[in-house]
Image (cartoon, rainbow, N blue to C red; front, side, top):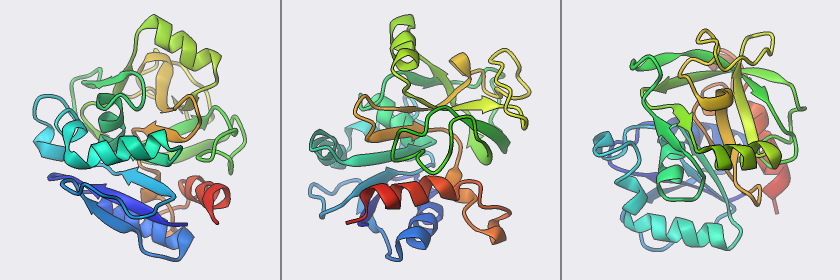
Length: 233
């Protein structure tokens, strides 16, 4: 599987993501600079976490207009698979590749801690190595992770089964009003969503930071294993 990681000024999770991708594919991902105007032949593009352009204006707003994003959008239009994590999720929403927006955390504080996610669907390349209802641990680190969208979009996401992950308790209980589990206050405790064609996923927590026992666990590895199974050729 051929993968590429987009690097913007302020990106700081590209090496973490490269470790995760290299571990499951056996080959190093291509590092794609934000000014690049051509892409190599790829199966998956990842927009990693960080603070692209210093999070000026809004998180991800400036990165969404980088030269490389024209190529990323063209890749998506050709049916390419894209994963956006944390700042990458913010960029995908700002670029219009995923619906909704990421607002300031409900408590107006930057959060850096573990959380638990409940898998809401196993019918995507990103979630196929889990069963619906599975719960896994993932680190989060963000100040603007409060997922929001209008009522029509929310009904569409829920009705079409396009919520990939929700914040939950360790036991898998989802309660959007419980700030002990829904840490940033996201609507319906949404932690990750999928595009209408199931080929683009955005999520706020960091599965790439739990892919090896030396990292403290392998909770996030099924996401990457599933992508290899779905996309390898």
